[in-house]
Length: 288
Image 1 (tube, rainbow, N blue to C red):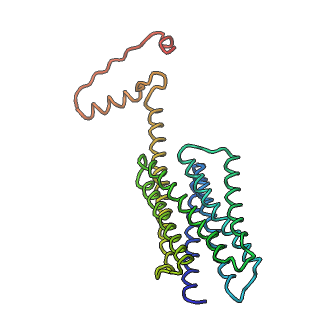
Image 2: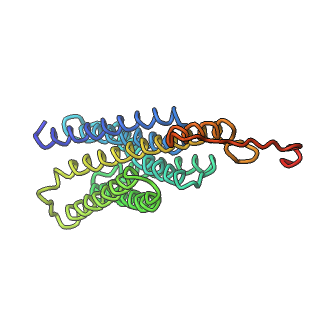
Image 3: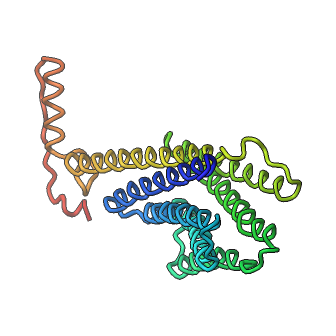
């Protein structure tokens, strides 16, 4: 194994590990809150990890003396199917966040179409060694273009929603946008290599940028989840306080709240305090 391949191996494994860790975090929060977008985003990170592992295995098999055309094509189909599935899950999760819940049949159709698209691009030109440039452009170029467009669109939509949220949503939207731009950068490198035979010196290290962007996406989403948990706690606490202190029929402070206010006023002013209680006959008629 050469040094460049070893570095690539480390980057692939690091990104897969980060994706698995993020999927575990989303699975935990989904179990607590049962929010559908957490489930979809968690599954998207599982698909991302599957893509990275399968792509790494396909690269290893492609090197001599391993050979194995059938296994290489199978791994390529698995990796590309998972890659497009990850994009579809990310987009569906974002749609749910925007309060536009798609129908279950629509979700299944989108996920199936995305997976079949990945498998189709892996099988096309698979048995023709002479069509290697076309195969690279179809598999990698198309995936980079679609994935970058999806991340940029998701980033724009989340940024609009982030104006009503805290730092976490803004950070996640910015990181997704940065990752979309990075994928366009990788697409540009691929076009330069295949079209003009030029390979930039920094090309072997673009995986580092992918890893950093992925880390920031995960960090932003986790901060967003924590902020949403805090908001839900504050709303629940406010609702409990209202049930305790306010009469549900009239909307006025109840007797316990009034007595508590009187005691607080007396302690604060240290003066004599008088209270008048007025009873209303046939209050039920007023309520109706």
